Length: 189
Image 1 (cartoon, one colour):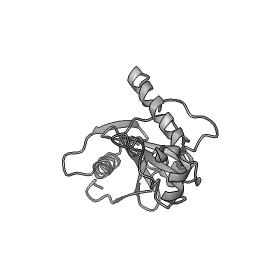
Image 2: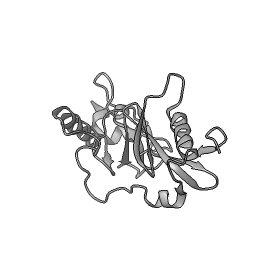
Image 3: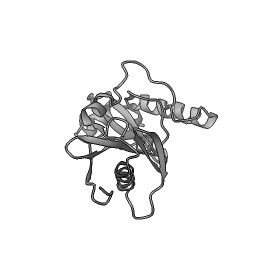
Image 4: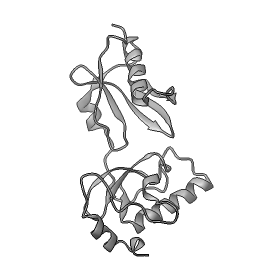
């Protein structure tokens, strides 16, 4: 079987935005995710950085094609989707570390993390899985106003030109933009 005949589909991402690449009914040949513009895959053989996709190519499509080639060549093995789902990260019940495990503890990253956590507190968000992952990486957050949790990006929360971020907090609705503005002092300045 060649990679060109191997049909794959992309499953729903976990809370770290790792997309399972699935063959057949429920066999996962790897997971793909984006980190600082690069696309990486995690397989039975470990993690591999595919770098940035060529212009005009979606990173997830590039990752799925790579995984299909590796599987067709016998270099990676498939596992049951149920196993992948069972091993997916879960929110922590307590405080999270300052930095995401992939973020080096440099003075710049630490300063950015402190700024990000102060902004989350001010706007009533809470990190539930990892510390600060950088501005343009997925971050699993909990909305303290309504209890919604999901992936957000710090770059969408920090506001622009001294203004607070949008009062539209997340998909699925929150408590309404007027109530958000009334409850969070940053919108009243």
